[in-house]
Amino acid sequence: MKKILITLTFIFSLNLNAQKQFEGSWTSKTSDYVTTIIASDYAILKVFNFSFEDDHYIKEEIIEQNNNEFTTKLYNKRNGYEVLVKYYFLEEKLYCRFFGDFDGVVQMYKK
Image (cartoon, rainbow, N blue to C red; front, side, top):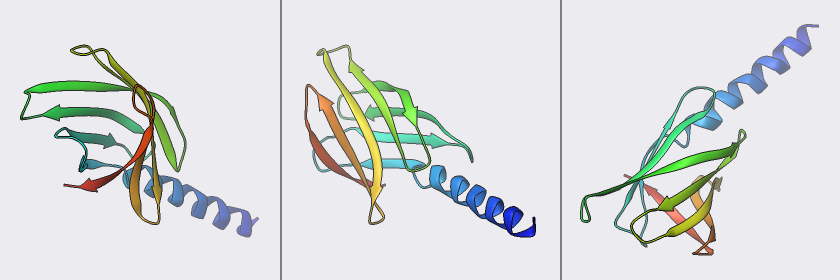
């Protein structure tokens, strides 16, 4: 019984840290937008992008998430650009895998 409680506590603590690692403002070398991710201890709460250069805001809809990754849907009304974005960490670096009007992988940098 004691081992089970220790194991559950360990798993729960990994889950808490898994979501928090995504939190913050992120940039990439391929866009002038800043991606902001807001997370609680339990889930990704909100993802949005803002360009100070274009004075434009784009909200991403969270469609799926687990401890290690999450997927959003991004639609830009200005130009009809639509993609699914899968966020994940690989070797302590955040990557976005895009599917849709752009297909590719982009590394993100914490601002």
